[in-house]
Length: 224
Image (cartoon, rainbow, N blue to C red; front, side):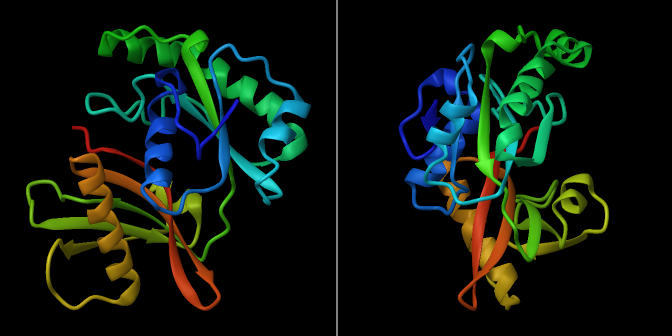
């Protein structure tokens, strides 16, 4: 088990590696660890790994080798679990790993010409972020390269599921923006520069001592 604040090996998978890069570049990323493929996981090991984290509940997500890559996002293929109490994390990790062996995953792998197996699956455990705003940002809008798309919601499930969310189109440069949109745009463009390609970014905005702080939940290249 490796902390996201450390340098990660390739087998940690795409999602974990990108989160680690964001952390090392100075972006706010939820505290967490990566369980590597075939690593035996116990409650004691989880609690030791999460000592620096303060949350009562956690998000448990897949991090397959090619996940969140330039060719394939694997969006919706593997299981994710949210609001998992610490004492239930061991079983949640097992369920997320096992989702690599489902028929859905096998079919996606066949179409993408990729071998998918739970033996190659890493799992990311991160603090659940309690925020005032959740959102998704595409740093370049389809067919409008000078624009970006930002969706916002007061509920995490709303913005990721496309329900109860508002979508706005913003100029990538210039214009007068609401401070929250300016915060998102600036962060999104910096993340795009970090990875060198247009990004699909999931984020949350927390109020810390009266100031909005953007937390990056994940970032991946925009794929068609």
